[in-house]
Image 1 (cartoon, helix red, strand yellow):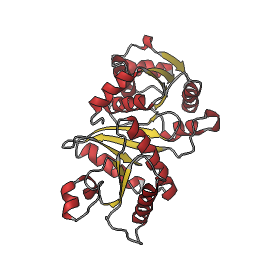
Image 2 (image 1 turned 180 degrees about the horizontal axis):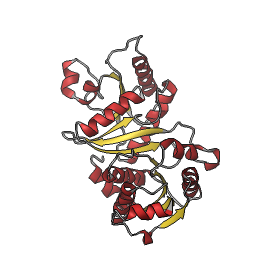
Image 3 (image 1 turned 180 degrees about the vertical axis):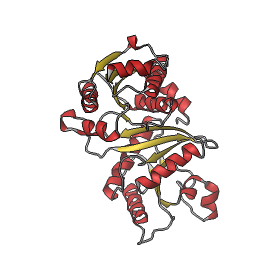
Image 4 (image 1 turned 120 degrees about the vertical axis):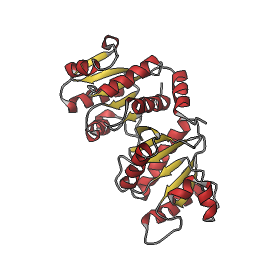
Length: 300
């Protein structure tokens, strides 16, 4: 099982070079991350965006643009549509957001003409490497689905489980989070957790071991789960943390980054290809981590 971003990078390198279509590519951190991925043999890219802007941002990095194809498109919506078409036409394996609103690139990716839909909703997964833990954590959904209902949570879990499988975890432990670890009829998150556990037990949700509801502490801390008398294989051992709403996921995501200084990455799953959607505030290292994960998930 892959337990760190360094291991992800090595595995992605071993899989071979993938092609990324970068939409609105005039972003220096994106260019720097692509340069690093190219140097490692993980990925190369086709840049779509304002050509002069791309050249200007490249002056702040050590990337040699002569090694890359650039498609000049100043309109951001059209740039996203063109990047999506590169994936649809098989010229790229991965779609990546540059300096453009997430809604714009996802609108292009979800268009019927793009042919990238799978039937599941798209969902965001943040992957973290946290000091003191010898494994990766997956947090979902902290970036797309605002208040998912039970059906959507099932699909969110299916998406992230597929991702965990691609990263070498054949049976990830999934904790459905709430404010408490007991089912409370007044708290919908606990009712959803109970229903999702039953789906997992009946085989409706496959490829993982699912438990819940869990409060955050007894999902990640064996000591905390023992203290509260919680006996379950997932208790204290969760790999995947399913948050009830986007607010809770977003706060948890940023707390890990800014309080715990965790190494992070972000990717949108549920489409036929990985979609790398990082925050504009994310570093080039975080973007490289996301590229590595996308390369592992991408089909040849």
